[in-house]
Length: 161
Length: 96
Image (cartoon, rainbow over all chains, first blue to last red):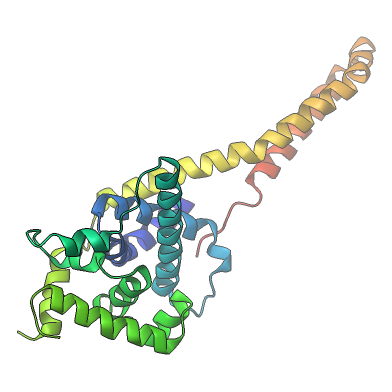
């Protein structure tokens, strides 16, 4: 059996979770899918560093979050180089009252760590402890991100938190 | 509908499909291209070293050929090719 044949079931089994997580972080499905492919390639090249007793999906989430952060840093550098005024998604989402505020837009209004914590704990069902380890944040910070993020989402979606 | 179930149902709308062969194939193709690039990158120093080695031993080979040592040269070339193949196959990441 070739490496490709052995890796295909792993991609098939985890693609939905990784892509969903990245879609919630990026707010753009094409960009998220592109990053998800990079995640699987990075996973393949660093399989040796994966601890066999660890949760493979959590490990992939960790790679995905680091890839997302790297892509955001690269995008910021690109914007600076092109001398564009870097305007955060938060300003866009909140300043325009006529904009249809769906969940994705509401997600983009959260800070990156807050969005990651919400995507992991509320959407993907990852425990606070695992999310804290994965995002390299203190447990209390993750819990606060989830609580505040949830309240902000519900508030922006027109629900009472 | 509770707040959490509303959020869950909204998230479910944007969930990618559970089975997506097109995505899997695209990922595997990209992986194959990446592996090819890695392999080429790994082989470049080997190629340069081989060329340098050939250049260094060219006078000896020429002397061998002139003294009817063609069989020795062919055997050495086969041995070298096998060693190069072994080196290129080594260090391939193993999968679970």
